[in-house]
Image 1 (cartoon, helix red, strand yellow):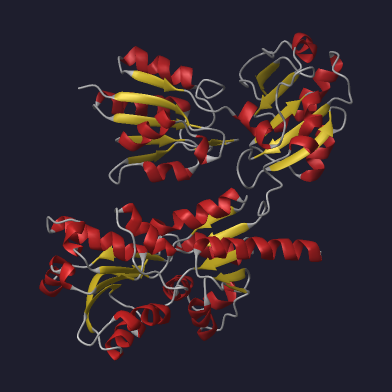
Image 2 (tube, one colour; image 1 turned 135 degrees about the horizontal axis):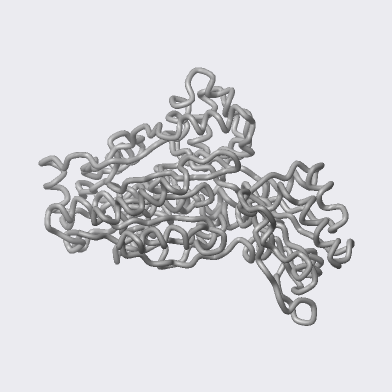
Length: 509
């Protein structure tokens, strides 16, 4: 029984630069062997039962030697496993993909190359530097800056390289930068040639240093630029001021902690990332289904007999339809019931299920749900409320006071997610978080539980952003004064609030 090994280019750092085929291979893999430069976001697309093997190699520190990696790939391939071998950049551009493929071929294990976006081109692009440009640069080369140390002499034709191409990108070359710059000048490259050194290219922690061949080694040493970095040499570097687009985004350079449940963090994280923020996901909560008891089963199956069905969260929509599926039913059980969604995110979750909300309150609070429904409920009208195990009593009590006959179906619960507790504590303790976001009271209380007795003091090291006044009140109860409190209780409004705060603080400096 023989499997398949995919030698995949994971891209330069921005996990969204993975190819479609690369993602497909990750999704179906039995085993994933990944490198230091392969962003761990990519692992979220893996199957829950996948076997993960870290094979990262950093300067003078190898988790696994190359021969051990080769042996692993052969072993799992012969066991009939589908293996995704994730390598930074492209597997065949100084990624040793060819070496691994030769070992697989020798062992009779099928393999495929899945090319990736190479850092030698993409890192300069994210710094606003095209490696070719009409009338300025019509050729480029990608060169290793770190040759095999066992070689007796360099395999690079420095005399030819120095002037043969317009743009040169060196990978893994920061440690040898004095020699690289000296060799290029020695063989004819002008000493005032522009040079860019780009660390962590394409990631929101990217650093870009601009210098010249004559001074770049000294400037990099002063700035403390470390690997992993790309060195780009050529006149195209002068275009950065005109073409800079990534590291001048409004939230670039800001570290934002997202404590929202991982299943829901994506929207907030993506919007922050689009504005350049470095998002650190440290989920404080997660949701899980509750058993569908007899009372809940009866309410769901007879949903169409209710005057209104109220959904108080997008998660409530998800678990309602999950319960429907378990019961062998679909949205037709809702019949002619009026559907109320507490806010736009909940309405969108319903829309994704093919349903349009009849009622969406003017703002996204329980009190507003009561205000919107009270006028249409006559005495004795039945209302079905989809809620988590623990929730505010505002809606059921308010609807009962309006004369409604209220049934509450509790289909899920919110529980502590402490899987990122160590990372959360370390980030806050080191003062590395610029903002921490809270999107519900439970994210506040669970974050404090994770952090322990000094949690409130740690949180105060960052600017605290709350989605609305209820969440903010929970912060205050625990001795934390929020810096930002949303007036419109949505994720887009929260992102806009942080963006405005960054701009305000920047202008005040």
